[in-house]
Each structure stands twice: as C-alpha cells, then as structure tokens.
Image 1 (cartoon, rainbow, N blue to C red):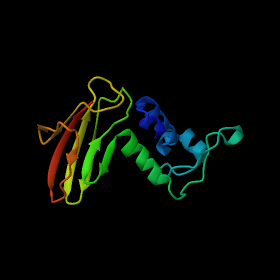
Image 2: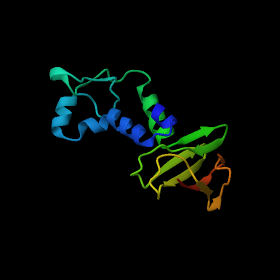
Image 3: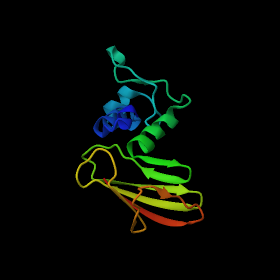
Length: 153
C-alpha cells in the first residue's frame, strides 16, 4: 500500500503478488510446501530451513480487509468517499487494461481502465456513459441503473 501511495505501481503489484495466497499454490509441489489454504492470507510465510515457503497464522482478524484495501483501493485505485468515485490506479506497466464491476446501492457501475501507454499510475481522462468528466470525479447515483465508466491512464 505504501508503494502504491508513492505512485510506484510496479513495486505495489510485485509485493501484492508476493503476499497473494493463490501465488503460492500454482503447482502441486508449491501446495505441498505452502500447506495452508490458498484462499486465506497467511500472516507468515517461513523463509529459512526446512519450513521455507510454508504458510502460517491463517484466518486471523483483519487480514482480508487489508488485502482488499491493498488490491482494490491501492492498486486498482477504486476510491469511494462522500458519494463520489475516483480512480487512482498504481499498476504494473505491463497491464494494458482491467475492469471492475462495482455495485453502489441499487446501481451497477461497469468500470474499464485502459493503459495504452504502459503507465504505472494516474488517470488522464474519465468518461461516464460516453461523456467526458473533466474533474475526473464521478458522483455516484444509487437509485438503480447501469453506468459505464471508461478511464484512460
């Protein structure tokens, strides 16, 4: 989260991959070494001796909330405050685009972020239902409906 806050998308995504449980279970050998659930953030991954690579301290309070904040808010940049949505990505330059489906009360926002120039942070333009939003802040409407947001880095 600190790397993302500083605008270092490459490092933020690299560190996120390192702590992401699914990354430790990509092969049968990795599963045997990790030995904990691939869907729960481990508080520890041992680094030395015969336990190197093994996870520990799973299911402790707060871990999922921090992982959510790191991934969705700090890296993908989905920020909602005071009924306003801002997109502030901090991603790897190799990511060409990503999308988010965000529900706000009775409304659904389909968000697509394009990165044609291989940037790691920041948004140049945002469109809501085809209309450019110069202030790059979308006022959320929760009264029902589908909204299309496109953003370009």
